[in-house]
Length: 581
Image 1 (cartoon, one colour):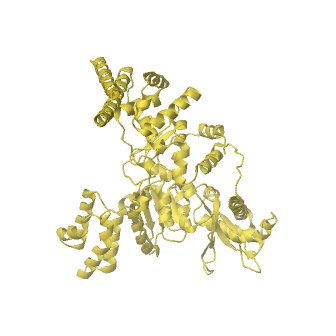
Image 2 (tube, helix red, strand yellow):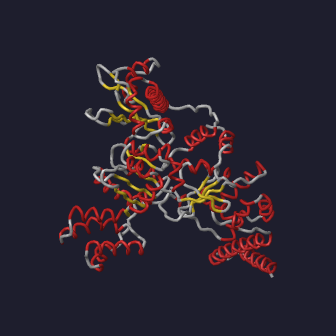
Image 3 (cartoon, helix red, strand yellow):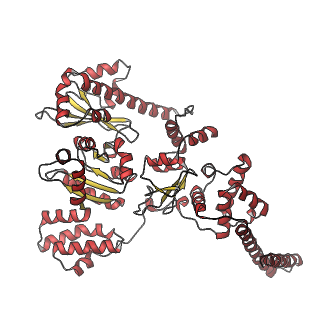
């Protein structure tokens, strides 16, 4: 167990706005910050972060909580893991909890692999900067227009031609041969040797800027394979990783857009020119897992490829993922013979960005043009093209957007618009999948207005807690969620003499409801008259419910005491109403 004071100390040393800004784009909106929610698909930002209260809430899907809640949901980790992760960020040391033997072994292996990769990256990097045989590599980087700053930022390196130089260096650190092999730093079985030899080295970083693998490129065009990559391991999965994400993540969130290119040098070339919101998949088509990573920061993805790229067909397959994931995709094919690196070197940053804005195509229209180029415009071809487009158009729920697409498709295929609409205009019938069902805590809760106002007042200021306590109506609340919230608010107030939503929500089963109520208080004006009216309404409602129950009992049994209780309730109601007049 981690002591509660440690948990609070970590949270107090961090600012929720700074933490969340590392993962999604936030813009100031009055006293709060607003962004696109990372927990559901939306185009209009409804995700609010309060620096004053140190909480977040999405008014679209009702996700809400404090900094721990966000990290748990965003990274899909446990509370304990979130505490350790944020402790590292806050510079707070937590004594290690007891782990099972299996957990300890797995964590130790991961940490050793990270350390091995760090050692190897430093070895390759220093060799690039100082090694005599790396002169050709240094000249190559210079020819590609890469500065010392970029070489340092991405920790680029060079692997010597020798067979066992890295292996020998790392074995001095008492590392096992098996671990070196698992890290893809050596190869072979009986006779082992360095995995990367005579290659430029591109360290691959994860989101947390830890090195998880390497890519190596030959300088000699006659050598094969041209690129060699680390094998998958417990810390590296090629289909989930993106080159450049450690540099790009905060810029992607700030710009609310990401450029996806094909290779290492495309990323490096664009970053060299000041375009940092760029990443590359690692030798594969963009995968669903990689799109999910990018969705944490933006829903706008621009795919950029050269005209003769073999990746264009793979890119078409990526578009289906965009639709499934609710991503706004665009595609840019560069002029013939140009790749992104060469093109940005030629035209510069501003002209490159202008070209992207003017020439990139909407994903549907790009696919349509590609299908026309591939199949032509015969009757059979048009039918085939419409069949390909049909499931994609069925996912679009905005009537105007769908109508504009249908009109454009009709014109480009020279097919009567009514026929296109008849075939493509139908919406797909929605059948929820398991992952589409919101958990109970994500379902927006509806409360009686008077009861809601009472709890919001208690969350806003200490003086209203005392007012509500004196009114003695908390036991009359009919919503179980509000009953639980008020209990935790009172407990926290009794212990500390304060009201701190970011701390109280750690105690309740309804953090999302509490963050919603708390943020809504910023738009409310609390005063004694309104609170007094709410208290009376709550009492009146409670008495009405009691009367109804007593009438039901009186009908079933002739009991003078029940009748007396009923009459007393009527008298109390009249007195309460009289107080209103």
